[in-house]
Length: 180
Image (cartoon, rainbow, N blue to C red; front, side, top):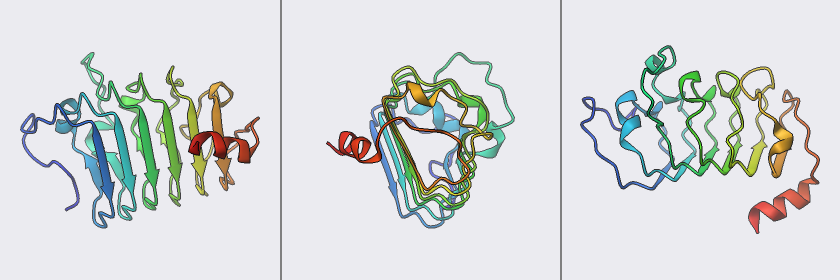
């Protein structure tokens, strides 16, 4: 399976799905088709772990389209965790950069080819409290991570050689605060 939720537009109704955890889907290349985006209004937590072939969270054709709709596609998403997705270049395309009004936690680690979180500048979500970027050798400031990093309360950047963000907090202090 190279894409989850393949089907006709609006053929899926997942209106009550609050948590999605995708683990070890070795051949998965795309998490969401464009047709499924509107069908996840209650999604609060998204974890994608060890999907070695994952290239895109959202299928390519969305990247070049500008939505004419006022819909917010992830209105309740609070937690985004992405780990060990080596072929992923960007987490989200430009067209949904402002779709995270409730995002509180963003943890991304061990994605060797990841160049950027978003394909364009994006403003910091108003509720973002925790950001962790770890072991991302290709992630660089100039490609999609243009937000005011200092405004995030708990932040940790570790082993991201190309990333030019700085953190005021001590690594141990942040780790303790994140993990409890």
